[in-house]
Image 1: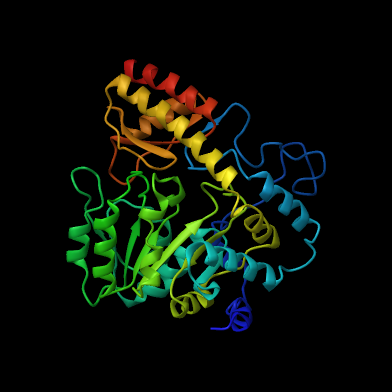
Image 2: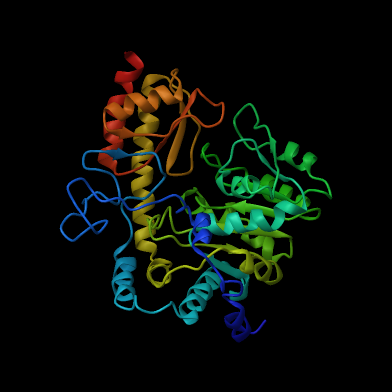
Length: 389
């Protein structure tokens, strides 16, 4: 497909969007409430809480898998430029430029790339598109928010397959569950909240076989944080002609969770089918930031080094305490403290440390994210106090 044609169809389906479409971007239910003592405007000048965005002062935010060292300066410079152009809708050329950068790096064509407001939006769109075709087969424990988006609308059913005893994705069991009536297989590699990466050869072979029967979606939100991103990625399977979709995000390694930018890579035909289902389009600030930092290898390396430094501290603390944990290749660690996860969350909150609570019925497991190193140090000092209390 010529690039000019992809430009014409880039925003197909965007017309007619309403405020309800923002639900796909995770903004539903948000409201502006004036801080105590203010009147009229929601946040009049001079009355804005300095912690309206990000953690409140003194809080170690270790619950959301963010990279607090971002955005990079390369992204910030472009955001400043984009803000000066904020009166205008984003030009399609900006999106096409970023699509071309992503395509070049991944060995695909630009029309195979779908840009959205975080990978959450494109994952939700895919669930809406494929859910009516049949069950979404997935591991029992994975980042299921976007599949649930379609399920909660009555447009999808999630068929969960138990993890192995080692908390790994049971690829053999998932493959056995796939039939011609399956609407979609959804995998997350590295998985969230376990942090585990599947063996590349085994994983990719299973994806190839399943893709012969149904579409396989691989969420690679944390792929850049894995030990060998290139070997672990399923993007090459798309170029081989397999029915595979890969999603990625700028929210993790790039430190742009609040900027909202993500993308999918698929065949040109699949990408064209996904675009009309996405619920909005990214603002000029997102496109500009993405263009600025996508190939900023120095920042990527720095961020990965800070994650590794913090993660090694957590591993060492857990080893000292004799606690079980999973060998994460992400910016979070899933561990067993001997206490219920919600109890750990509450006790940490008393110390102004935010960690995740219980996932499903995995009440023995707690997930802690790698925030700033000094905040992770606070967690590592606090955990022994909880265990020994």
